[in-house]
Length: 240
Ligand code: 1GP
Image: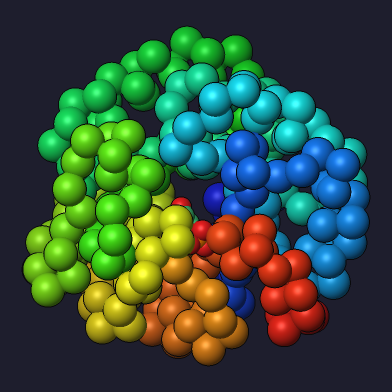
């Protein structure tokens, strides 16, 4: 079964999924084996690798090292076309639907197409929606776009619907890495009631309660990065 079918099946069964996000600029290569011992004791089901930038082109080496120590599927979560490597299992093929910058709506995707054509990566078309997470994030700066205010619920819902209608397989509601305000339960709930494809939620989640809240509201897959970078003991709260 491929990655997307697994996500769909989990959604059908009400099984919740957790992705650990690894930023290739921040991970210490030497620490990968011990980091993954903790990942494997936790409820994590996927590994996402990527960042707004990858200045030292570390992604390929990071993914190769990760693949040596884990059985979990590794998905690229690329900031741009330079972050594609065939060493992963799949890629979130993102379109930044909340923004109006053609570079991140379609240009990067066109640049990526001939590269992806020559890989075995499973491609997961993903509508990426930045919502205001209380502070300016790297994604905002790099993409030169504005997030949608959380008060503008209808725009978030309609953008999600437009993503589904134009063929996206996933909708990612993103408050931004290190956000001070997570995507509200109200927004997650209303988006999940409006669309039929799985919903990914991430940005600023730093407690088990926030994770549970996102799941309860309708998130199918939650992404957590920063808190694991800062405190690996957080894995202890998420034991299987
Ligand atoms: C960011 O949604 C992810 O793209 C995860 O955010 O680093 O705040 O957990 P955090």
